Figure 1 (cartoon, rainbow, N blue to C red):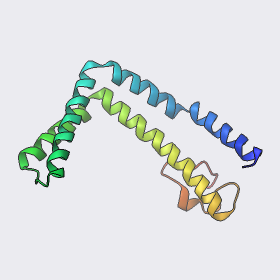
Figure 2: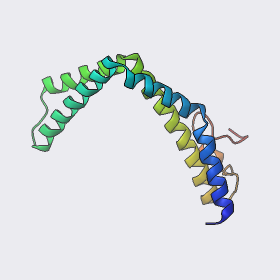
Figure 3: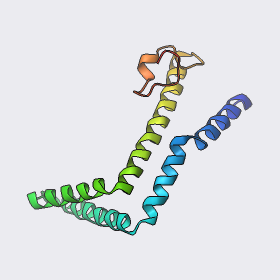
Length: 133
């Protein structure tokens, strides 16, 4: 790898590290981890998921009661404001990384340094940062 590529990769990494999306992810994660109720919900949800996974691994069909139990747990998790905020922040951060990857993939595929030659293929709803989005 050339020094120029490494320099630009380090600059990109620094920009991502300073992004609002990552800041929000860290803040919401910290709040979620600090909350006992959120942690209990997550633990119960993971236990239920594991139980159902084990049933399926043994070749058993999930009963209506099993499906309802996991649906209820999912609803409780989604209704917790701290968990919901964290999941939204995680989604926003992932979306930003996906946009960065799309720009890189487009630039590599087209040979265009800006990554914007065929903007329609790599842009998310939030745009890719190109002037054409």
